[in-house]
Length: 575
Image (tube, rainbow, N blue to C red; front, side):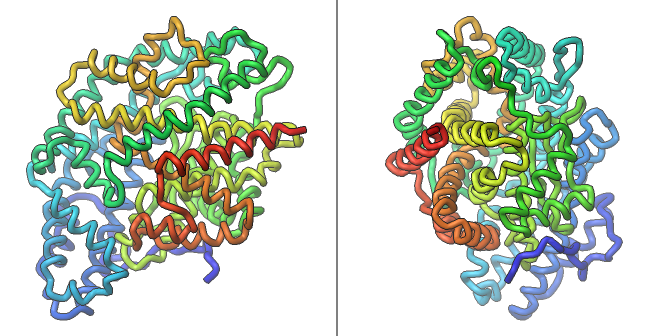
């Protein structure tokens, strides 16, 4: 079947077509109906599952819109209150019902008659939710959901003044590519000084979240939040020991390549010492890459790029644009970062990002575009739970698109020399991102194994881990205070704990997809669509297999992929 972006909002059969989530009183009768309903056959059970899914989809989409609107404008109190109302007043009342419905499902004699292959991962997730549910955690989880959003509110207010003009930190980052080294240093210091102004606020916020997370794990009979969170995230197919192996593989097989790349950068810039504000720069006389000027131009060019890869990909973005599901440009009061938010009923997701006219923004746009394509492909799944694919395969969807799309980046760059530079920078980042992934992941393991640490112990441990994965080629002397608080810029630590190793696993998958693409583009795109189309109906190793990939992050496998990427970089540099 040829995929189509012409998706329609899911029709309702259980809920009234005009039903809107306003309060718990309006929602409760539907939960009561599901809980009290008699199930006398497997056909009854399947209808009950569809009705449960419809209710879940409507609630999920409502919650998503509350979060989207709030992140688009963190200074609007009304939007913040709408989000907080859902998290504090509605979600806590849903959770006990959701647990009872889960138990009703697994205890039904007809559940064993369901198609085992079709329902295996779904039922596994249901059982996991039952295992983790504790009444005592409901208020803690509600408070945590609200509190985690404070990170975006604090960060959204951060601005610096450069050459007499105010910029968000995302916008100011473009000056780090400027040929004027003095300006680069000035902006680097301004950005970091601005972050330091809120270091205590961000430390207090993190400490508060940490203690709530610790208590949630203890309430659920887990020794620490890391073990609880691995279970909650559905990490059935790899363990903490695999993560440790990944960290070591990065040190052994990635750091030498990172050092090599930075030595080449230092030589290219003609510098005796490479400082952190030099990493994104080009030699004097070479203008930074400026692939677009406005958000509209970014989406227009990305659609053209996606069309060349496969018209369906471009159609997905066109559909999102036509219904206003894009907010791309950076501005004051907008939360930092970027995301693709699936919308369970509508089907066409929402892309949020902070574009400032850089190559990084192109990468973010095609990355979130990859996520969006997966949202489109899974929209027709029978149950909402079938769409809940593992985050690792979701990141393969996005990171593969970064690499697939490179051959069509000519829409962003007028001449061959700029296009080559853009590809070179992208591939260098494919390698240099691994040390940061390993740093953030290793830091999280330590944090949650030692939840009662002091703020000083946290900062000291961060520096210790950071040094393990920092290139010896870059000179950070005199910048120790900035470094101590570098972790505070990572949104995931605050909002989605332990979500970061996924980027490492997925980057390996994306490199594998790109190897396929270089040999046979049509077959690679076909494998990509086939894997994403399965949603969450298969295990993670099975999804990787469907994409023609190995689910492997052993040192040898990582080493081979890194050599491949480095060879591709060297090929670009050949005259």
